[in-house]
Amino acid sequence: MKRYMCAILRTFMVVVMLAVAIGASAHYKIFAVKGDVSLKHGRETGKAVVDAQVLPADVIIVGQDASVELLDTRDSKTYKVSKPGQYSPSSIVFEARRQSVETTSAVNRNLRIGKSGNPDKQVVYLAKGKVTRALQNYDPHSDTLQIDNKMLGHYVKSMIAKAGALESQKFPVPVKSERTPDGGMKLRIANNIQFPLYFNVLRINPDGTVSLAEIGQPVGSYVLLPNQELMRSQSRDIDEDNRYLVLMAHYYFEVDQLLEAINDSTEPAAAPSGDLPVYLYPF
Image (cartoon, rainbow, N blue to C red):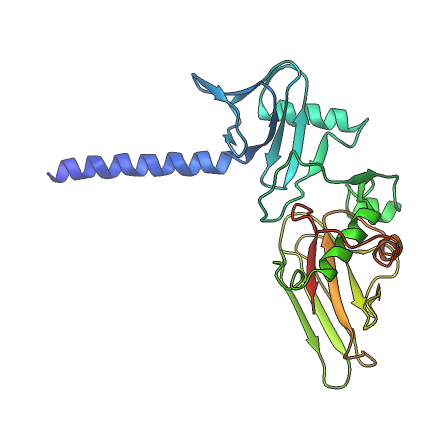
């Protein structure tokens, strides 16, 4: 009996060790599939489906007029190929990076933080030139994409207009705000995820207009790299009737163009889109 129990225990430990090894190496997942795409694992071949784990030794078979996009869960980047053929995960990454020399569409960051969404739905981004050499070095992807400022402004405007919409949102990273008794305020934000975040601080005035907050960034937006924390404070002269809003996204945006779109009286406040990868924190 004792020998039998030892054999069961050894088998159990082997299974656990295999599961840990597989989990450690399976850092790729299927992010999006279009058309005829198959996943070959060992001797078994099946249809590639979104969120399926992909091991380094697996083979992804892309058919004619089909495409597949892999998510690297270590850094939240996605890699896409649309040429027919058989690929390992590493060859898909190589091919996507090669294509990205000529186009920004092949390699993009995963635009979701803890939100389920349909990756096939189009979200509006703009290709742009380099901002500055310093920002390019700070965030190597900063010179490829930015959010459409007009689209972003209309989204923020619609969220402000909808009762309870701002308060119902979940913010993806730790944030703390405080109003001081002597008319000041403090804001602290920490980036505990694996890719840079862009944000700014807006003021919602009593007349309904929106402007840059006293602790906002007047040029472009703040950038927080992983494991960084930023604290801004104003010691006095904060009107207690004003409301404030932290706007956070994964890509660069221009605050001047954003405010123009928010305060554009000719554009009605449309219904907010729940799929937009933008996060709002009112305080």
